[in-house]
Figure 1 (cartoon, rainbow, N blue to C red):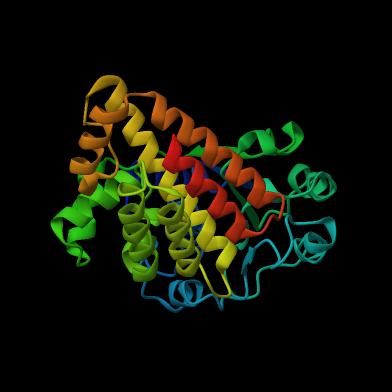
Figure 2: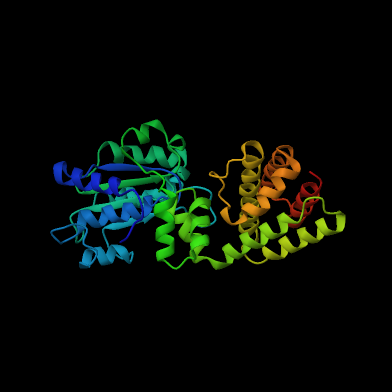
Length: 329
């Protein structure tokens, strides 16, 4: 299982396992896309691998974990359609912690998006965290430590994940087939998060959505009423389909990064922190035309649009209003 970045984290875990065995519970912390969940599965493999050098990735135990069919490794995810993991969702696994491993050395319970655990669910976990069975290892994977109760986080061994340097990330992207310019752009867009960069690379429709959105943005400023509405209609077509709301969120995120770059360039002129590397020419032009007032206003409008989206307003109307105001700022 190849995991990009945070090699020191995994090396530290291996050394700790060799020295004193596993902790009863871990808390993997860091931004989304840093490989925390993959590392949790890697740890499960290291605990149950039958080879001398663990995890080998090729023994029956490692292969079962990689294919999500090992009887002693459970990944608890937020149920589809729910905003959080409730107490009813964790009860079965709490009861199962008392069981001995079926075929491995350790039972491993991985809770993905642990920050979405409800307070009731977290309180239900306390007894398991306080009195863990000797063969049970729990891994809470979270992008927000503050979302967890202090009584929960204090009973786990914290493991903190860091972002990957852009140079390392874009080399990996090039090895996976990205063109050099695209690899550099993705590495900066992802802000050191391999999972995010690889998601962009593998999802061609998402990359095309970004590029088309930026094309529209570049010609939007100063547009008259009809061209602005036409831009909104084109953006609305881009995000049509079953995942319309997720696509609209991606459009807004693309816009935010663009105007963040524009604000940075207009304020300082420094290009090192620009993430949309493939749009530097457009950004330079717009930065000299409008100063800092335009991107600041645009970012306020985008925040407002996101709030409207969260309030379940009509996505088409949100885009129409946004494009009209962006054309005038």
